[in-house]
Structures are given as structure tokens and as C-alpha cells.
Length: 148
Length: 148
Length: 148
Length: 148
Image (cartoon, rainbow over the protein chains, first blue to last red):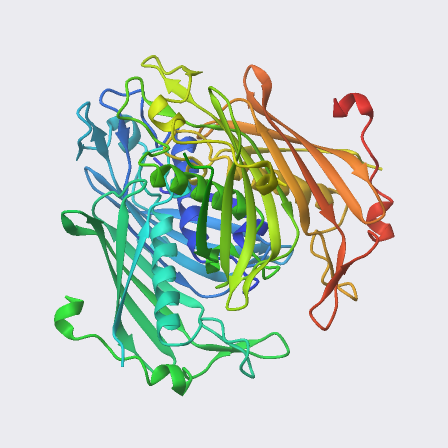
């Protein structure tokens, strides 16, 4: 049973903007990167086209509070925590910190991503369905003190 | 005094993902596009490097609820509404609708962007400052019924 | 018969990088934007999923020479010219110029995009096929003096 | 003296498009990623703001031939090879291959990136200058057989 995952990535040049810092929209890609790496760490992929019907996890909500800037070539730790688990829905909290020789910085940003499990039907329609057992069984909500 | 702005843009190929729809991170770029076009409609730019000290509007909060997908070459109306105005802070509500020959669709998504006015000091530091009068005087909060 | 198309777009904030100018990778998106708008001007779309088999135009070659920078909120003219037309292949030349009250600038950049028409078969494979007549009949190569 | 560098990265969801494959513009970001990692491997950064005047390496030419698609979660090897070294100019060849348990695939794509060393002067102007010795001394052109 897993309730967290940490991904470290180095800020790329193309992720910066003319203000000299990471463009805020990239934090949403970073969250998704950590989410997908979390599934891989559990032996799954966010894209389940091998199932019948194929399953996917569209985003229904995303948010982020930006506290400090981060710059080109700095290392960012993206700390994913499972904050909510329902039959068809998963919601994640993300804490962003800078990683340097001095250790971890204060929080750069904090975000939330909420996804719903959907089936893609042959007629092109899609509908929400329970998260498949092989994945749901491996995921649990993080302890409250980590979600504070 | 302005409290709203509407921007229409056509979905570009590079904005789609393998699920066949616009990648969710692009909605945050769309909000920013509408915000910047709003400033231009008031005779201003989000980048005020001609002032001394130069001013900017970093994002402190962004969120979006995703309700329906939107696809390549479809037209998206981004309706910006001023939801909050404080001395140093502006917050916007965005309603996304698809535009077609049949008119406007139901809401595709709804988002919020909150920005703070900051001065960039010569020593590289920055600090929040009041929004300059020439801009603040032109912006007012939208009527409550539009923000519902 | 069309051999050219002009698209004007304003540089967006998220397209800039920490050097204060448009990130070079965006010029390739700009070329594609103009290409797709060219098809639309001919009553077609680059995505032909309504045909059986569905057709598409994957890129086989792209290049760009960068001569001058372009910045946030500046207007860019993307001038598409058909430089080569073969049964299954189209190749485009793009001339980028800045648009301002003073008129058109010198060339900012010049690029090439070469695409091939492919059919997507039901088994997932794809193979090159002739460009469909309804599109091919509307496209011709630009005069040599425009391609210089 | 270094003439090559290899970077492996996993394809991210946001890098795909509605055709189900990596959008071609991302290959240019991949080249830049490998270039910047190459400088880091030599103890340098592409951004030399600590020098007086600050130096940078704007792109003057970029091109890519696309041979095979690559998909979400596949691993891509980006093999950088120095193909040309002049006083003020560096040009790189990039060979892209898929990495799997079966080893390296055939080439997915092949690209070129040519950059020039420029100084940013206090008045905002910039001009080409020789590549600084501490970097130039560490870089040599790859053997011809590797560039074939």
C-alpha cells in the first residue's frame, strides 16, 4: 500500500519565461509527471488501453499556490501524497521543494490534482467507472500529519 | 471601468494530447492569454518594465475545474471576470465555453487566477506593491450575478 | 489554386524564455499553425478522420534559421509558401517577419516543413498514400521569385 | 576533450499529441536538453551570467528528420555528437533511438542544432564573441565515422 511518491527533476530552459523563472503552467505538468511515475512505481500506467474497455484518468480539478520562484537548472522535488481515495476518484496533494547541497528548501509551491477513472466505450462515449482493483488495492490515503 | 473581457481562440494541434483532447495544462495558458489581452484592452501590459522600479504580476494561485473536453480546431471562448480587487491583488474568474455555429456550449471548464503586483528592485529582490493607479482606476469587480 | 497563406499572431508570454525572447522551439509550432490555417482556408483540415481510411500529414522534416529575436506582445507574420508538391509530399517555406506600425520588419527567421500524406489502417499500421484530389487540386507551387 | 553525450528521457504525457505520438516540436526541446546536459557534464552552464559581459548561446539553426514515431512512457536516447567547432560557433548532430529491454531501436529521428556564442552588453545589444577558453578547450569534433 503506497500513499506517497517523490520525483526529482531539473528545471529545463524551455520551462522558463521572460521573468527568468519557471512559467506557472509547468507546475501542472510537474504534478502530472509525478502522478504518472507513481502509477509506474505500482506497476501500472495512467493509460490502460490494454483493458476492455480501455480506461483513463482525466483530470477534473487542478490547483496550485505559488510561494517562491524556481529557476533554470535548479532541482525540484515533487512530493506526491494521496489525499483522497474514493471508488472512482483519486486526489493528490503535491509539495514542491528545491533540492540543493544545503538540502531541501522551504516549499516553492503546493498543488492538488483530482482525477476520475473513466472507461472509453467503442461508440466514442466515456463514463466514470471504479478504479480497477489491481491499482486501487495498492493505494491508500496518506496520514493526516503529512497532508497538513 | 472594466470588469470583464472575452477572448476567442481556436485549439491548436500542439495543444492536444494522446487522449485526443486539449491537455489540461493549456487551460492555464488560456487564462493568462485572456488576462494579458484584458490589460491590453485597457492600454496596459502585464510587463511594466518602463516604470521605475519595473512592475510585474506573478501568479500566486491558479485553479481549474474541467467539465467537458475540447478538441483540435474547435473555438474556445475564454470569459474573464474580475472577482476580487485589493490594493496589491487581482483575482479573476474564467468561464470556458465552446463556440460553434450553434452558439455557445455549456461550460467546458471554469478557472481562477490570482496575481499580485510586485516591484523588481535593482538588487534582484522583489516585493509586493500597490497596483499602479492608471491600471487600478480602470478595473472593477464584476456584478455578483456574473460571478455565480 | 493557392500557393501561399499569411497568418499573424501575437507572441504569448508562455512562449518566451529566460533570455527574454521567444523560445526557438515555438517557431516550429508557428509553422504548423500557418500550415493548418492554410488547409482551413482551402476548406480542409490536416486531420481527415472522416475519410476511410483516415488520413493524416506527419512531419518528415523541419528546419529553421533564426536571424533576429522576437519578444512578448510583438506581432509575427508567418508567410507560408508552397515550395514543393509531389503525389504524396508537400513542402512549405516560411518567412517570419515582425509586424508593427512601421510595417513589416526584415526577416526574423526562415523555416521549412515537409509533410507526407499517410493512411491510418485499422490494424494500427500506416503507409504513405497520394494526397487526396480535393486538396491536391487546390495547391500549387509558389513562383520561384517568392521562394528566393 | 569531449565530443559526445548521451541523455535518456522518458516520453511525458504532455509531449504527445492527438495523433498518439510525440509532437515533433518536442524533438527540438530534447536536443536542447541534451546540449545543456553536455555543458553540465563539462562543468559549465549554457547560461553564463556570472561572466562580464554575460555570455549565452542563441540558436541560429535547427533541423530534424523524423523517421519513426515514439510514444508515451517509451524511453528515448538522445545521442549528441559535436559535428563542427569554430571560434564562435558550435554545431551538434543528434541521433534519437528508442531504448527498451531489447536494446536500442533503429533511429527514430536525426537532428542538428547550431549555436553561436554571444555577449550581452549593458546597453541591451549583443554580439558574437569567441567561445570562452575554459569551455572550448573541453570540446572537440567527433570522429567522422560517428557523424555518418
